[in-house]
Amino acid sequence: MQETQVAGDVHTAVKGPGKHFYIESYGCAMNFSDSEIIGSIMTDNGYTHTNDEFAADVVFLNTCAIRDNAEQTIRHRLMHLRNNKRKNSGLIIGVLGCMAERLKTKLLEEEKLVDVVAGPDAYRDLPKLVAEVEDGNKAINVLLSREETYAEISPLRLNTNGVSAFISIMRGCDNMCSFCVVPFTRGRERSRDPESILNEARILSQSGYKEITLLGQNVDSYLWFGGGPKIDFKNATEEQKANAITFDKLLEMVALVDPQMRIRFSTSHPKDISDAVLHTIVKYENICNYIHLPAQSGNSRILEAMNRTYTREWYLDKVNRIREIIPGCGISCDIISGFCSETEEEHRDTLSLMEISRFDFSYMYKYSERPGTLAQKKMTDDVPEEVKSRRLSEIILLQNRLSLENNRQYIGKVVRVLADNLSKKSDKDLSGRNDQNVKVVFPKETFSIGDFVDVLIERVTTTTLIGKAIK
Ligand code: SAH
Ligand code: SF4
Ligand code: F3S
Image 1 (spheres, rainbow, N blue to C red):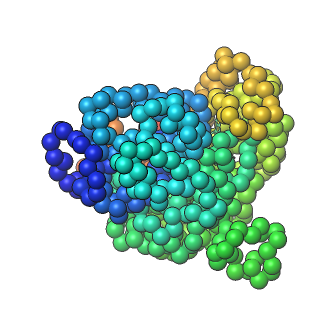
Image 2 (image 1 turned 180 degrees about the vertical axis):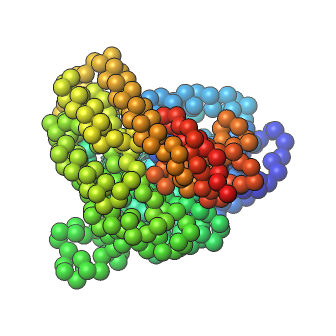
Image 3 (image 1 turned 90 degrees about the vertical axis):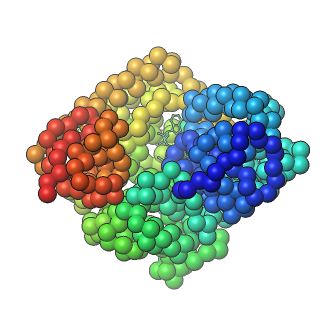
């Protein structure tokens, strides 16, 4: 996006149009997507986005609270911002997102330099909150909503490559996994009006985007009955059920917007992903053969303690079902090491689940106790730190081997890649992803970012397929 010229280096608190805001996002894709909604709300209210934090009158940190280290990162960042504030006393600092929601007024009290605190459902209020600070007050809104989906807000695409974009299809989460803070920071689950989702997809297609990712904490429970309060599918009338838009139907509707545009989605919950979704993936060429299916653990007792509501066997059956219906489907996973009371044997169950499922890649974490969660209230975080670390290393080591073995299967094969960036290592190479979401790097030659390129894979690493375009 073209930035307007920023005047001088002396900043005073100026009201109204002409002020600049800067936003930094942490955490999951949902937060990055929210920042684009925030961007839109702020620009609609006369603010201009800047990528230069030192040129900003308002600095927003859109924060994550998922693990303790995520919050520590924000605290360090806030300490650095103190310097900016010393040079520019009118600077307004806002903490938004999940950590803001979790800590509420505490952030204003503990971090004296924070001026604005706004939770994930309060972004429409941001211009007003900033104005209150300009009037000399601190400002906070951490109310969670049962309805807010920011449905009609057209996101301001920030730091975009013009190729891939996120579309948020729902907010919140009703699952209450015992380790997880998200239900507390993002509130109850609600689905967004499908018409507004399709509109956003159409706009992206018309603007030349080549890939969209539908976002939700649990996309498989997307459900639209035509507005109004959420009805549990089980309690709906036959007529309501027949007219309901479930995730498979939404996926189909989005796929039909532009057959040239790739569709991805995240995250799928093993208890909810249906055969209908799998068949829809197969039916449409442009829906990527890739599913992010977090297991968290491979042991049924731990899964129960985590309140994941499925067993090891259920999970493995889902993986089989995916492989049966979508041959060659990429599957990735999230895993937590050292959850409360996890034994060595139970940890080995996680390793064996990974081995059987042969994940293409995984996001792997040490359990971090979060205040307010069921696990924090009812269980003891009793696996010693060094045991969590050692188990995590074993998990990572195994995943690296599985990734390498999976990647080796591509050698000598041609994969279709959407080039979405220059390679990090060399600007003579392009980087992109294949259908299964594996990273591919190849010489740029005459290709551009945004091109679909057929690449012959010659060698691989644990994370990357490397090859050459075939003409
Ligand atoms: N909605 C998604 C994931 C959201 S959070 C799902 O249901 O899978 C992303 C990942 O962070 C989780 O899958 C989990 O692996 C990890 N995570 C969440 N809470 C955590 C905690 N307290 N400690 C360590 N990892 C955690
Ligand atoms: Fe957290 Fe579970 Fe909801 Fe995912 S499904 S956001 S892990 S509570
Ligand atoms: Fe973090 Fe909130 Fe996402 S806690 S992972 S930013 S939903």
